[in-house]
Length: 315
Length: 94
Ligand SMILES: [Fe+2]
Ligand SMILES: [Fe+2]
Image (cartoon, rainbow over all chains, first blue to last red; front, side):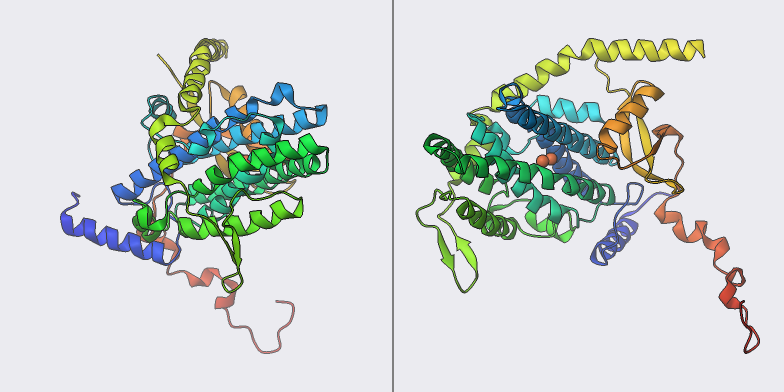
């Protein structure tokens, strides 16, 4: 049967009713093309972020101060690879294949979280990344786990279970350095100074400026606004910083007793858009690195296929 | 020519006696690689004790759009439920 316009609008209405009643959408269900495309964009971006996010941390594997620290960092990075794979797998249920997603990443057509375009300059940065970047990711992903698309929401649940370790190992690094000597303290503070604002930007532009927000909320791809999530993250993090003697690098930081929120200075959005557009400190390096190792693995994939074929012939 | 291998669906049994539950998918060149990838991706914290992998192409699924028609045969047979039957008052152990 051909679908005429009225049957499409009927399906759309039915679809929206499912969403309104918190019924999850599954891969084979009918969905508006725009819902599918919006999800492919967001989920593949999310997957790319997990994968590219391994680079700034990988920078410190060989320089970790102790064997314990090295093992923890390796396990964390391996989790991030896993997160990328859960998400690629969930995105594939929407009908795009992995090869295409990777091409989009390498050609700059698909974005990833801008936070990973900042360099990790010293060991304290590994602490700050775990504490702040994974901390912000937890706030965001806990919200996404309540989203309407079944495979995405299930991937988020799995990821959230693993993120707790990521944030705690980061905070432990910061706490240890803050209990150390003057130069260790200085290193930790310097790291917070550099990562604070970029981590606030992870939640995206203000609700009033966010292009995809309204439709995403209607479809429950997102169930809370950027500004709400950011505020929740600020409130948690400010207290954690003070607890170990760190200073939030914001002269205007004030506690509002009525709203019980920590209020901050306006965010430097010019910097944000500049990094999004590709002019951050490490944008080019991150994609070049990804492409290089992807291409160098080509012969391994080819060999594995030839081996698989031989195996089949023997059987 | 680049390739990303074929796709396999992963089912994990969490504990002895439980059913294998769908966890997600992996890419792999052959069945051994599929099993190993499934282990590395989905059971890094002992989440399972047994894994099945099935080529994604081999999965056949009904659709929600056909839900009503497809499951219709079960709709008018409430006599399949024990509560359909009225027992004489005072009957025990039944
Ligand atoms: Fe992650
Ligand atoms: Fe993480």
